[in-house]
Image 1 (tube, one colour):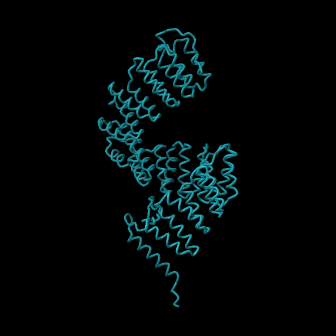
Image 2 (cartoon, rainbow, N blue to C red):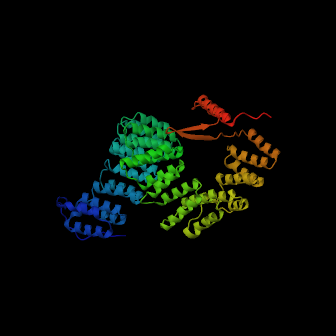
Image 3 (cartoon, rainbow, N blue to C red):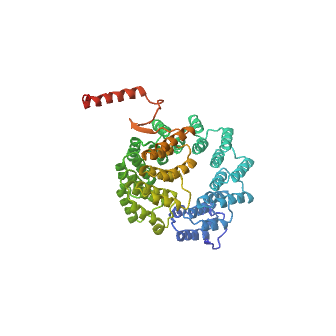
Length: 536
């Protein structure tokens, strides 16, 4: 354990009054253990370590530099630790990965005769959240009731967050309803809890009747909709936020970009990119990564590359996202060249990077290169392939007709194949006419996803392609007998900055008569251009 500088210090009650004004700024400049020891050595002989405010700042700096052992050694040798000093350490310990120690120290604070205040409880509850210890959180709640602080806005907000994080939404709501105060932070806590849990109607209902909203309120709802696959609602709330004059920050724009990606809304992605430039906002690596992903998945790989090449600092996620984007657009060789650039930049790829690389090989039919990258994972980078990488490799082999190799790879996997892998084999069987492998894959898929009609259709098509009409009809008959209905496909189109989704026989949200009239007009013009039909 690192030991602090501990010469014999004078017992001076006037330490605080002699606090050098430059010492706090000096603390902020301490960047390593050597400078901290020097500062501590300056404090102790002058009795400044008796100033708990100054000592708390010193301990906080130790924690911020990752020197938690040194920080705790200084705290343990404090002459007269008060509530402020205890709070400083309880607050810092969870960020240092010592949440359990923070809870013990919170208990020790009370054992030493100190009475926790409205700061102590939120710090302790944050530690309970990090530990996922709902029972500990309940005990802290009981202690807050005993002291009479459960109605304090800061404590109540922390309690609601604790119950929401533990999945106890009913307890959080009861507490919220009992307090019934106008604290924006408290409203945000319950709305965020509902949104993260997928209770979007409850989150929206509370959001609409909030006495006052701030950016966090809007972001919670936008993020909830984006997280739970309701991107149209997320974009609607985001646009409404802008109309009400609320400026988005990085977090809200990340949530909006996630929704854009799901919808494939290129126009809104471009607007967010332009907004960042016009407002001079900080283009963080995370925000640029989200823009790359949005542009790539919305059909503009050129804009994705533009954002990527303009980045001054690129993370592994940045490289992985652009590699995946290039692969998605069928530019496999460019994706692999990007991977080579990544290696030259001395960035170590992760599992997701290899998923993108193998996907690039699959989309471009580069079997030999794919095999090489798959073998490279454990041999060169020490990364054991997971089911995602196996799935990409099996898809690559299946697409190019190496059905036996793909089947052998499935049998040799250290885990059970999932529906995506068996689906790849079924699709490959359809392409290359292998009914035996198709039947095997279908049997597995019936068990894994019995409601997916597409699996039955593929096997039926395999039989039909081989002229085995009886087997094809038997599959269709089995679908009818089991009540498995073919799910209609969906399409979407972006028009006037709005994404419209269409499904077969779905006339609920679209002017079908107008669409049919336009299609009739187009059909008539095409026939006119072809000239009169030939009479046979």
